[in-house]
Image (cartoon, helix red, strand yellow):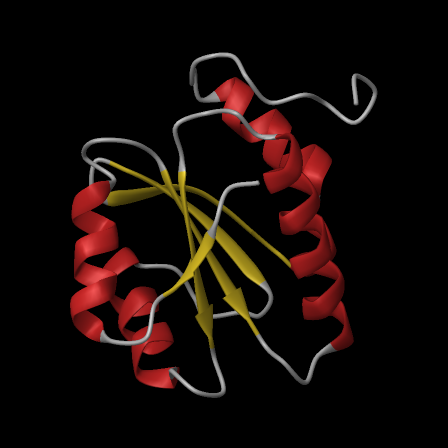
Length: 126
């Protein structure tokens, strides 16, 4: 399974945005105290188990790294929500979803629609 790397400072966020010039980066903003966010994290992990694409996965835990979360919202021009998934390509957000729209099936669909190389099994294929 791919790793979900934690972003804990602004330099790590900057590196993730820069990395999106080389490959897609999925940022996942998570709240430890929100049941919906815990369900969305399970969906992201389910997606990771099936994903074979060259994608970097990053997580910001809002309670412990609020400054990183706020800077991501400001830099990417996306209103803060948790849970929230943001797909970055070439240093900018090309898609985002929050709450119950963060699902393994939606992540597979969005990667397929953004023309990434094959490798994500849909839930019906798994």
